[in-house]
Image (cartoon, rainbow, N blue to C red; front, side, top):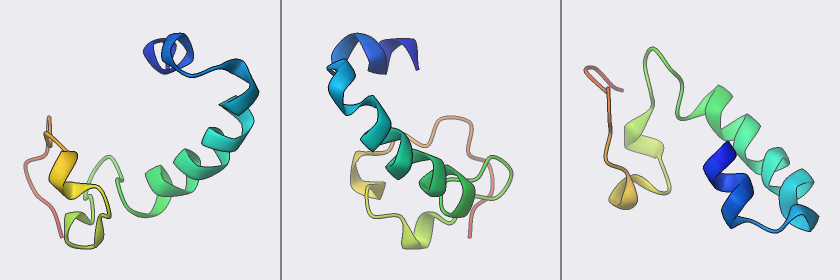
Length: 53
């Protein structure tokens, strides 16, 4: 979050939060991410991903 805040102007923080929270809850979940439906999979390093759907 800190890196994102340093990079992204504060005027966009609310908008990006509205995008990232649902993304984290429904696609890039901590325990079993849905990589098969991820719109940014090509850019993802999948750090810490052992299993996915």
